[in-house]
Length: 303
Image 1 (cartoon, one colour):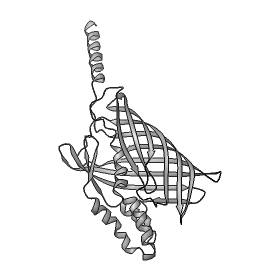
Image 2 (image 1 turned 120 degrees about the vertical axis):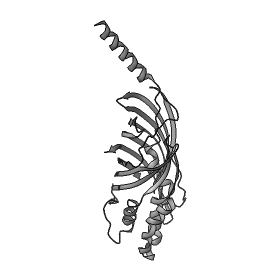
Image 3 (image 1 turned 180 degrees about the horizontal axis):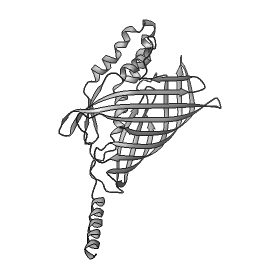
Image 4 (image 1 turned 180 degrees about the vertical axis):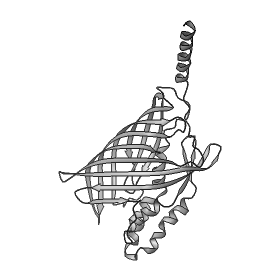
């Protein structure tokens, strides 16, 4: 009995030492294996115009597949495929649904461009520490998608080209993949340790920068439990004549589960709140609207 008690104490003690050992997180992806992640969000946008409040609901659903096609030391070439880019808008002014996974009609030019975005594959260099380095085939990807412009009538070419550029901008595509890997700390961390990073999110209508602070809360069964708080600030648009821009600030909180074997997020749940001003320009007129945006998001690894 004494030996069993001693063994139990030794096992418990060694387990305690393991739990207290610094955690080193890196991206450890198997070459050629396909990983898939689903990112959904729901936004409630409240805008005030001439004292009257309008509410819009926005739903986004992104499904992205990726795999390592080449690896040299600490840099991986990862091939990304945007399987589904789904967007639903329900506002007093309009209702709109787009889904890149559904074939578009011949004259639905923007929808056809989104079909192409989901058809071709984009290769990026990502370090094992989760840092985006560069795209490998950006020009070929962009040119392949924009072949659709050959079928657009001259009367609509300028409009469709501008909409396409909003989707195909290099920084926009970067912001579609970078957030999946930025949680990796630069050095080993213990439970309770914090680390920071910053990244930008750009879309065709708004750009924001996020100042993130992560905390390692616990380690359970090859899973690292993290929490994140973020300060959010909008970025002025590159084009001063853009039809819409936002000047907002806010905060975000999220809880993440990270697979310690791969370094990938297996699940993340977050909430965002931003407030500020939305500016809409139309035919030389400018309207500024106080705006509040609340959103909930979830990232899940798809088996």
